[in-house]
Every structure is written in C-alpha cells, then in structure tokens.
Length: 214
View 1 (cartoon, one colour):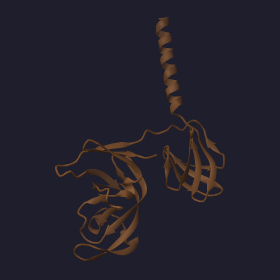
View 2 (cartoon, one colour):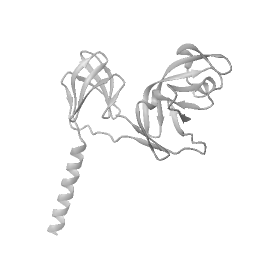
View 3 (cartoon, rainbow, N blue to C red):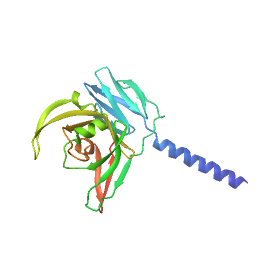
C-alpha cells in the first residue's frame, strides 16, 4: 500500500513539473508606436501590431501601454508590467496537405468565418479571389482600394482589401491582405503569400506541411 502511495505521489509530482514547464510569464520590456518588446518566458522579441509571438498577439501598442490577446482574452499592459504564470504556451497548429493527381494542393478553410476551398499558390503575392466568389463569401470588397490589372482577355478592375481572418484546419491568421479581381477568375480562391508568409512551410516527400508561426 505504501509503495502505491509513493508511486501516486511521484506521478503527481511529475505532472506538476510538466505543467510548470509549459507556463511562462509575459512581460512588456519596451514600448514604441505600434511595436513592443515582449518577453515570453525566456524569449524576447520586438513584435509589431497584429503579429503573434509565442502565442501572444500584440493588438496595439503606444508609448503608454500595449494591448495583448492571450487565449482569447484581451489584456492591457504597461511598461515592465507582466502577467503571472497562469499563461500557458500554446502548441503550434499544423496541417498536412497531399497533392491531387495533377500535383495541386487544395485545402478547405474559411474566410471571415465562411467556409471555402483554397488552392495553395506560393507564387501569388496575396490571397486572391474572383469578384463572383467574393460576393458569394459576403466580402464587401468595393470598399477596398481600387486599381486595374491586365489579364489575358482584358484590363479588369481589382480591389485590395483586408480580410478579418483566413483559416485552414486549425491554423488561423488575422488581418490578411487580399486581392479581388472583377469577374469569374481565378476559378479557385488562391491561398497566396499574404497568408503563407505568416506560416512555416516545408515538404515531406510530396506532402506539404504548413505550421502556424507564433
């Protein structure tokens, strides 16, 4: 019986140490306009507004304070102010995408919470959507910055906009630049580098591995 009690105490101790190892203090070391030097555990980085570092999103920053989002909770921190060890570092979300018969990478996801399918396109500068598809997704693109682009058929109107969120699997990125092209092309929503550059991408054989960058 005593040996069983000792074993239980030992297991509880290891569990406690494992939780403590995942915990980290979040502290504001320095403040700038739209930037802050954050310390998360033993790591430090100058983080720009809208950027996520070690699971901590910097929503805004000024010379007075920084507003951060942790596990969905918005907190305001002053210079040298920190959050206690109740913060737990998140595991990085990742997704594996296998190619289709033509070697193309398609993946399901959402734009502003609305489901859609994407074609992963590392050659596209932005997430790119046709005007027809944008309307179906209830994206009010005509409030964006209008311009013109030459296609194979004609000169068409384009709008540069900001999407509140784009997600694939459990990977979610906010405030994503997108391009909407008047008409029906491209036929697929192109998942371009305005999203992909904020993730880590590598190939494992023919499979594409995409991991959320914190």
